[in-house]
Image 1 (tube, rainbow, N blue to C red):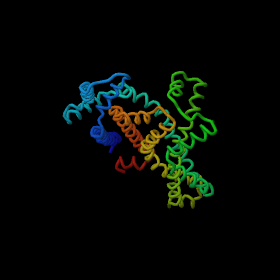
Image 2: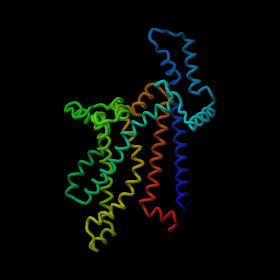
Image 3: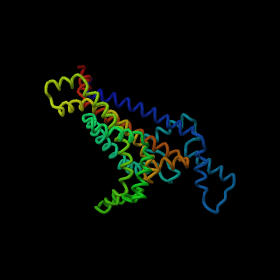
Image 4: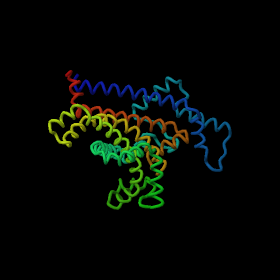
Length: 337
Protein backbone atom coordinates (compact mmCIF):
# COMPACT_ATOMS: atom_id res chain seq x y z
CA UNK A 1 0.00 0.00 0.00
CA UNK A 2 1.47 3.34 -1.06
CA UNK A 3 1.61 6.44 1.09
CA UNK A 4 -0.98 8.13 -1.12
CA UNK A 5 -3.43 5.24 -0.69
CA UNK A 6 -2.86 5.28 3.08
CA UNK A 7 -3.57 9.02 3.23
CA UNK A 8 -6.70 8.66 1.07
CA UNK A 9 -8.01 5.88 3.31
CA UNK A 10 -7.44 7.96 6.43
CA UNK A 11 -9.11 10.99 4.84
CA UNK A 12 -12.13 8.89 3.83
CA UNK A 13 -12.40 7.45 7.34
CA UNK A 14 -12.28 10.87 8.99
CA UNK A 15 -14.80 12.32 6.52
CA UNK A 16 -17.23 9.52 7.41
CA UNK A 17 -16.66 10.15 11.12
CA UNK A 18 -17.20 13.88 10.64
CA UNK A 19 -20.46 13.37 8.73
CA UNK A 20 -21.75 10.92 11.34
CA UNK A 21 -20.76 13.10 14.31
CA UNK A 22 -22.14 16.26 12.68
CA UNK A 23 -25.43 14.54 11.85
CA UNK A 24 -25.72 13.34 15.45
CA UNK A 25 -25.12 16.88 16.76
CA UNK A 26 -27.68 18.28 14.31
CA UNK A 27 -30.30 15.77 15.49
CA UNK A 28 -29.42 16.33 19.15
CA UNK A 29 -29.82 20.11 18.83
CA UNK A 30 -32.94 19.76 16.69
CA UNK A 31 -34.80 17.50 19.13
CA UNK A 32 -33.45 18.89 22.41
CA UNK A 33 -36.08 19.98 24.97
CA UNK A 34 -37.16 23.60 24.94
CA UNK A 35 -38.31 26.09 22.33
CA UNK A 36 -35.38 27.94 20.71
CA UNK A 37 -37.77 29.87 18.47
CA UNK A 38 -39.65 31.24 21.47
CA UNK A 39 -36.35 32.02 23.25
CA UNK A 40 -35.18 33.94 20.18
CA UNK A 41 -38.47 35.83 19.99
CA UNK A 42 -38.32 36.70 23.69
CA UNK A 43 -34.83 38.20 23.24
CA UNK A 44 -36.21 40.48 20.52
CA UNK A 45 -39.16 41.52 22.69
CA UNK A 46 -37.15 42.31 25.84
CA UNK A 47 -37.11 46.06 25.19
CA UNK A 48 -37.89 47.89 28.45
CA UNK A 49 -41.31 49.52 28.71
CA UNK A 50 -42.70 47.81 25.58
CA UNK A 51 -45.57 45.33 25.73
CA UNK A 52 -46.70 42.95 23.00
CA UNK A 53 -50.00 41.26 22.26
CA UNK A 54 -50.34 37.50 21.96
CA UNK A 55 -50.65 37.83 18.17
CA UNK A 56 -47.41 39.83 17.98
CA UNK A 57 -45.62 37.22 20.11
CA UNK A 58 -46.82 34.47 17.78
CA UNK A 59 -45.63 36.47 14.77
CA UNK A 60 -42.18 36.91 16.31
CA UNK A 61 -42.08 33.18 17.04
CA UNK A 62 -43.15 32.34 13.48
CA UNK A 63 -40.33 34.51 12.08
CA UNK A 64 -37.86 32.86 14.42
CA UNK A 65 -38.98 29.40 13.21
CA UNK A 66 -38.48 30.50 9.61
CA UNK A 67 -35.01 31.83 10.45
CA UNK A 68 -34.13 28.48 12.04
CA UNK A 69 -35.57 26.70 9.02
CA UNK A 70 -37.76 24.53 11.23
CA UNK A 71 -40.90 25.21 9.19
CA UNK A 72 -39.58 22.81 6.52
CA UNK A 73 -39.88 19.01 6.49
CA UNK A 74 -37.11 17.25 8.39
CA UNK A 75 -35.27 15.93 5.31
CA UNK A 76 -35.30 19.41 3.73
CA UNK A 77 -33.93 20.88 6.96
CA UNK A 78 -31.08 18.35 6.83
CA UNK A 79 -30.28 19.14 3.20
CA UNK A 80 -30.43 22.88 3.94
CA UNK A 81 -28.12 22.39 6.93
CA UNK A 82 -25.45 20.63 4.84
CA UNK A 83 -25.73 23.06 1.93
CA UNK A 84 -25.16 25.97 4.31
CA UNK A 85 -22.36 24.18 6.16
CA UNK A 86 -20.46 23.34 2.97
CA UNK A 87 -20.79 27.00 1.96
CA UNK A 88 -19.26 28.09 5.28
CA UNK A 89 -22.57 29.38 6.67
CA UNK A 90 -23.04 28.28 10.27
CA UNK A 91 -26.16 30.37 10.79
CA UNK A 92 -26.98 33.49 12.78
CA UNK A 93 -26.38 33.87 16.50
CA UNK A 94 -29.36 35.30 18.34
CA UNK A 95 -27.23 35.95 21.42
CA UNK A 96 -24.44 37.91 19.72
CA UNK A 97 -26.78 39.24 16.98
CA UNK A 98 -24.13 38.37 14.39
CA UNK A 99 -23.27 35.55 11.97
CA UNK A 100 -21.90 32.51 13.75
CA UNK A 101 -18.87 31.84 11.52
CA UNK A 102 -16.99 35.13 12.19
CA UNK A 103 -17.79 34.89 15.90
CA UNK A 104 -16.45 31.34 16.13
CA UNK A 105 -13.34 32.46 14.25
CA UNK A 106 -12.79 35.10 16.92
CA UNK A 107 -13.32 32.59 19.74
CA UNK A 108 -11.16 30.03 17.96
CA UNK A 109 -8.12 32.33 17.81
CA UNK A 110 -8.34 32.83 21.57
CA UNK A 111 -8.74 29.12 22.26
CA UNK A 112 -5.83 28.15 20.01
CA UNK A 113 -3.73 30.71 21.89
CA UNK A 114 -4.42 28.85 25.13
CA UNK A 115 -5.12 25.21 24.24
CA UNK A 116 -2.43 24.49 21.63
CA UNK A 117 0.61 25.56 23.70
CA UNK A 118 -0.88 23.85 26.77
CA UNK A 119 -1.39 20.57 24.91
CA UNK A 120 2.07 20.53 23.32
CA UNK A 121 4.04 21.66 26.38
CA UNK A 122 2.21 19.27 28.72
CA UNK A 123 2.98 16.42 26.29
CA UNK A 124 6.72 17.15 26.17
CA UNK A 125 7.06 17.81 29.90
CA UNK A 126 4.95 14.80 30.86
CA UNK A 127 6.87 12.38 28.65
CA UNK A 128 10.19 13.76 29.83
CA UNK A 129 9.25 13.41 33.51
CA UNK A 130 7.76 9.94 32.96
CA UNK A 131 10.90 8.71 31.21
CA UNK A 132 13.10 10.02 34.03
CA UNK A 133 10.87 8.48 36.68
CA UNK A 134 11.14 5.08 34.98
CA UNK A 135 14.93 5.26 34.83
CA UNK A 136 15.62 6.53 38.35
CA UNK A 137 13.65 4.68 41.00
CA UNK A 138 14.49 7.13 43.81
CA UNK A 139 13.09 9.96 41.73
CA UNK A 140 10.10 7.75 40.93
CA UNK A 141 9.19 7.44 44.61
CA UNK A 142 8.90 11.22 44.82
CA UNK A 143 7.25 11.86 41.47
CA UNK A 144 4.71 9.02 41.42
CA UNK A 145 2.39 10.39 44.15
CA UNK A 146 2.54 13.87 42.63
CA UNK A 147 1.73 12.53 39.16
CA UNK A 148 -1.25 10.56 40.44
CA UNK A 149 -2.55 13.62 42.29
CA UNK A 150 -2.25 15.78 39.17
CA UNK A 151 -3.87 13.15 36.95
CA UNK A 152 -6.88 12.71 39.23
CA UNK A 153 -7.42 16.45 39.77
CA UNK A 154 -10.18 17.97 37.60
CA UNK A 155 -9.21 20.98 35.51
CA UNK A 156 -11.76 23.23 37.19
CA UNK A 157 -10.65 22.27 40.72
CA UNK A 158 -7.00 23.03 40.07
CA UNK A 159 -8.07 26.23 38.33
CA UNK A 160 -10.05 27.33 41.37
CA UNK A 161 -7.14 26.56 43.71
CA UNK A 162 -4.65 28.47 41.56
CA UNK A 163 -7.00 31.41 41.05
CA UNK A 164 -7.64 31.71 44.78
CA UNK A 165 -4.08 31.17 46.06
CA UNK A 166 -2.01 32.92 43.37
CA UNK A 167 -4.64 35.38 42.21
CA UNK A 168 -6.44 36.45 45.40
CA UNK A 169 -4.55 35.46 48.57
CA UNK A 170 -1.11 36.03 47.06
CA UNK A 171 -1.84 38.20 44.00
CA UNK A 172 1.17 37.14 41.95
CA UNK A 173 -0.95 36.77 38.81
CA UNK A 174 -4.23 38.16 37.56
CA UNK A 175 -7.13 35.80 38.43
CA UNK A 176 -9.01 36.56 35.19
CA UNK A 177 -8.08 36.69 31.52
CA UNK A 178 -10.29 39.10 29.63
CA UNK A 179 -10.67 39.81 25.92
CA UNK A 180 -8.93 43.18 26.37
CA UNK A 181 -5.79 41.42 27.67
CA UNK A 182 -5.67 39.25 24.56
CA UNK A 183 -6.78 41.76 21.93
CA UNK A 184 -4.42 44.47 23.16
CA UNK A 185 -1.45 42.10 22.85
CA UNK A 186 -2.52 40.80 19.41
CA UNK A 187 -3.30 44.21 17.92
CA UNK A 188 -0.47 46.25 19.49
CA UNK A 189 2.31 43.82 20.45
CA UNK A 190 4.93 45.32 22.71
CA UNK A 191 6.84 44.41 25.84
CA UNK A 192 4.27 46.14 28.03
CA UNK A 193 1.23 44.44 26.45
CA UNK A 194 3.07 41.10 26.52
CA UNK A 195 3.72 41.45 30.25
CA UNK A 196 0.07 42.31 30.83
CA UNK A 197 -1.01 39.35 28.73
CA UNK A 198 1.39 36.96 30.49
CA UNK A 199 0.24 38.20 33.89
CA UNK A 200 -3.33 37.15 33.06
CA UNK A 201 -2.47 34.13 30.88
CA UNK A 202 -0.33 32.18 33.37
CA UNK A 203 -2.99 30.73 35.69
CA UNK A 204 -5.36 29.25 33.07
CA UNK A 205 -2.31 27.96 31.18
CA UNK A 206 -0.89 26.27 34.30
CA UNK A 207 -4.28 24.73 35.12
CA UNK A 208 -4.36 22.93 31.77
CA UNK A 209 -0.66 22.03 31.62
CA UNK A 210 -0.31 20.55 35.12
CA UNK A 211 -3.33 18.22 34.90
CA UNK A 212 -2.46 17.04 31.38
CA UNK A 213 1.21 16.66 32.27
CA UNK A 214 0.35 14.27 35.10
CA UNK A 215 -1.50 11.96 32.71
CA UNK A 216 1.27 11.96 30.11
CA UNK A 217 3.96 11.34 32.75
CA UNK A 218 2.06 8.42 34.31
CA UNK A 219 1.58 6.83 30.90
CA UNK A 220 5.20 7.28 29.81
CA UNK A 221 6.47 5.93 33.13
CA UNK A 222 4.49 2.69 32.67
CA UNK A 223 5.52 2.32 29.02
CA UNK A 224 9.21 2.95 29.75
CA UNK A 225 9.27 0.50 32.65
CA UNK A 226 7.77 -2.15 30.37
CA UNK A 227 10.27 -1.46 27.56
CA UNK A 228 13.26 -1.52 29.93
CA UNK A 229 12.29 -5.04 31.03
CA UNK A 230 11.94 -6.46 27.52
CA UNK A 231 14.36 -8.97 25.99
CA UNK A 232 15.94 -6.52 23.56
CA UNK A 233 16.75 -4.12 26.42
CA UNK A 234 18.33 -6.95 28.43
CA UNK A 235 20.30 -8.03 25.38
CA UNK A 236 21.63 -4.51 24.83
CA UNK A 237 22.75 -4.41 28.48
CA UNK A 238 24.68 -7.69 28.07
CA UNK A 239 26.40 -6.24 25.00
CA UNK A 240 27.71 -3.41 27.17
CA UNK A 241 25.46 -0.58 26.03
CA UNK A 242 25.18 2.22 28.58
CA UNK A 243 21.98 2.76 30.52
CA UNK A 244 21.43 6.01 28.66
CA UNK A 245 21.74 4.27 25.28
CA UNK A 246 19.33 1.50 26.32
CA UNK A 247 16.86 4.07 27.61
CA UNK A 248 17.11 5.91 24.29
CA UNK A 249 16.07 2.78 22.38
CA UNK A 250 13.30 2.10 24.88
CA UNK A 251 12.04 5.65 24.48
CA UNK A 252 11.69 5.18 20.70
CA UNK A 253 9.24 2.34 21.29
CA UNK A 254 7.49 3.88 24.28
CA UNK A 255 6.81 7.22 22.57
CA UNK A 256 4.60 5.74 19.81
CA UNK A 257 1.44 5.23 21.92
CA UNK A 258 1.97 8.68 23.38
CA UNK A 259 2.00 10.22 19.91
CA UNK A 260 -1.24 8.40 19.14
CA UNK A 261 -2.80 9.75 22.30
CA UNK A 262 -1.85 13.34 21.46
CA UNK A 263 -4.70 13.72 18.97
CA UNK A 264 -7.20 12.23 21.42
CA UNK A 265 -5.85 14.39 24.24
CA UNK A 266 -6.55 17.47 22.16
CA UNK A 267 -10.25 16.67 22.45
CA UNK A 268 -9.92 16.17 26.20
CA UNK A 269 -8.09 19.45 26.70
CA UNK A 270 -10.85 21.26 24.80
CA UNK A 271 -13.29 20.06 27.46
CA UNK A 272 -10.86 21.28 30.10
CA UNK A 273 -10.70 24.61 28.30
CA UNK A 274 -14.47 24.97 28.62
CA UNK A 275 -14.20 24.53 32.40
CA UNK A 276 -11.25 26.92 32.56
CA UNK A 277 -13.20 29.52 30.59
CA UNK A 278 -15.91 29.71 33.24
CA UNK A 279 -13.39 29.97 36.10
CA UNK A 280 -11.03 32.58 34.67
CA UNK A 281 -13.68 34.35 32.57
CA UNK A 282 -11.61 33.38 29.55
CA UNK A 283 -13.35 34.70 26.41
CA UNK A 284 -13.03 31.48 24.43
CA UNK A 285 -15.46 28.96 23.01
CA UNK A 286 -16.25 27.72 26.52
CA UNK A 287 -17.98 30.99 27.41
CA UNK A 288 -19.70 31.01 24.02
CA UNK A 289 -20.95 27.47 24.60
CA UNK A 290 -22.34 28.40 28.02
CA UNK A 291 -24.15 31.40 26.54
CA UNK A 292 -25.50 29.27 23.69
CA UNK A 293 -26.92 26.68 26.11
CA UNK A 294 -28.40 29.22 28.53
CA UNK A 295 -30.05 31.31 25.81
CA UNK A 296 -30.93 28.42 23.46
CA UNK A 297 -28.83 29.85 20.67
CA UNK A 298 -28.94 26.72 18.51
CA UNK A 299 -26.76 27.96 15.64
CA UNK A 300 -23.99 29.09 17.99
CA UNK A 301 -24.16 25.85 19.98
CA UNK A 302 -24.19 23.73 16.85
CA UNK A 303 -21.41 25.73 15.19
CA UNK A 304 -19.00 25.57 18.14
CA UNK A 305 -19.38 21.80 18.53
CA UNK A 306 -19.01 21.12 14.80
CA UNK A 307 -15.89 23.28 14.52
CA UNK A 308 -14.27 21.51 17.46
CA UNK A 309 -15.18 18.10 16.08
CA UNK A 310 -13.37 19.10 12.90
CA UNK A 311 -10.36 20.34 14.91
CA UNK A 312 -10.03 17.06 16.84
CA UNK A 313 -10.31 15.01 13.65
CA UNK A 314 -7.67 17.15 11.91
CA UNK A 315 -5.38 16.71 14.92
CA UNK A 316 -5.87 12.93 14.80
CA UNK A 317 -5.17 12.92 11.06
CA UNK A 318 -1.91 14.84 11.56
CA UNK A 319 -0.94 12.35 14.27
CA UNK A 320 -1.57 9.49 11.84
CA UNK A 321 0.83 11.08 9.35
CA UNK A 322 3.46 11.67 12.04
CA UNK A 323 3.11 8.04 13.11
CA UNK A 324 4.14 6.92 9.62
CA UNK A 325 7.30 9.02 9.91
CA UNK A 326 8.38 7.92 13.39
CA UNK A 327 7.39 4.23 13.30
CA UNK A 328 9.17 2.11 10.66
CA UNK A 329 6.79 -0.80 11.37
CA UNK A 330 3.93 1.23 9.90
CA UNK A 331 5.99 2.05 6.79
CA UNK A 332 6.95 -1.63 6.36
CA UNK A 333 3.30 -2.61 6.75
CA UNK A 334 2.31 -0.13 4.04
CA UNK A 335 4.89 -1.62 1.67
CA UNK A 336 3.85 -5.17 2.50
CA UNK A 337 7.07 -5.92 4.36
